[in-house]
Image 1: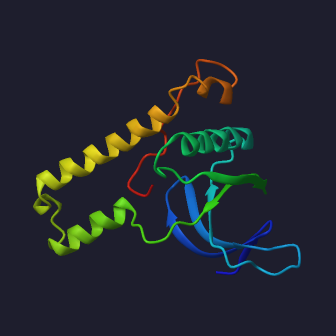
Image 2: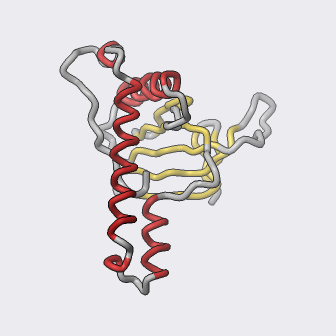
Length: 165
């Protein structure tokens, strides 16, 4: 893949959904060279997303990270728009696995039969996801979320929880 967006050279697609594409990327520095750090760039396919919304998500992601004892999010480092699309830049974390990859691995180990994945394992997995969302909310429990959004009725919407996240 040889695609460039702003200062970033996209190296490969890590994951794609109907609404987003997650790329592995390198950033060009002041001398024109690409640094050694790896970045994850999330491209939002729908043009209705406003960059201001991503900027607010950036504030919230940093607030969560700053208020948690353990790293439970990957904060947005920067946002930008290009050709009518919005992008969020994050540090690329390695060594993990998307939930969708884990499910595929388990399906392959069970000859494609999801029902053979032990129910206790499925329940434990869902419980971990619910606990993680609860931890995210507890990091925002200081009432400061309303300041990130300009009115108190906005709240937190989990519109992007899926096995690829």
